[in-house]
Length: 459
Image (cartoon, rainbow, N blue to C red):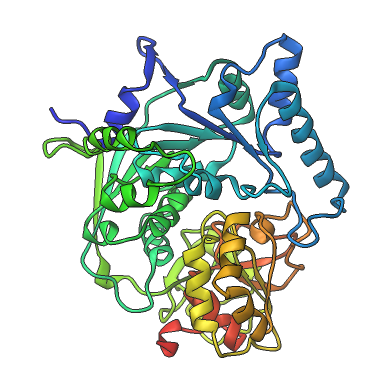
């Protein structure tokens, strides 16, 4: 019996199997940030334990930091305390920190790939659910809880029950105006926000293979939003070309040897999955959400479902939408381009290319937040900051920003935000904020018109 890609990576990292129980799994890379680590480090201190392999631990600040005036002290007391605590913990335990002012600082799931730390065949964890992003490289990557963060810091291993396996195939060519964010929102709308619970998902098919690495990261990033443990995509030439030459990538002969191994990381023809789905890329349109979980999504030219469902009614009451209505033309207050889902240079390019030569609508506030200092610097070198400035939009500094209400960038209560982030939960972007998830292209169209707009009208 053949093995799936997931089986090959997972099984290669099993240190010990407990009969009729979980497995001890070795972790290649452990990413940490300021939010989920304080209790873990305190636990190590109380037990008199050092970090087992500091060279396998990568630290950055992202969730709590401001995206303006980062050279000044952080205004919010809790945010400042979180960041200062991580600085102290990294100093005390000998971990390198990509902190504020560091040229490699950024959102944890952005800097790993761009530095070449994330590589095929690895196991990767972080105290953050969207660690699934790194699966785009053919890695087994998943989020963990704070107690598990302590476990990995202390042992470089984690106790886990092996998930079931799912494959989602997307075949064919994408229509104009449709990008990877639309693919994943479409899939989640089909199988629901809990349809992947208990599974690790492999994304496959010609439409997936046609995507860039940055687009693949957006897909895997949101695999967690269907309830899955994580998502991954088999590495190929696109993957190798992306990794080559990056700071922590293998060099010379080591890179050639790595490719020999990476090419083996694919699902065997006779491997089986516990569940499998097939979708036609031609059926996918620009997507928007209308409710309060990522599964509540529709093609932008469809109407909100009209059905009896208590959860739907609760969500629509929060969003102040009605069953059966179209969202096109709804006025929007904020547009947010950013988060670990869509803050990479390709996302900024998509947005800027549509904005170029136009002005943002007067009724909308637009926040464009790069996912890392490297992305920020690249955007400036390419003149994206100037394009945005001419449109009345400021390029901010790197961080998680308005993805979540843990820093200064919050959406006010009752206001609508079209966001390229990953979650539209009640209060996710600030108490009472109303979030509509969409792609960078749709976000750009909304920024121009000030209302929900089908981006295909501009193409």
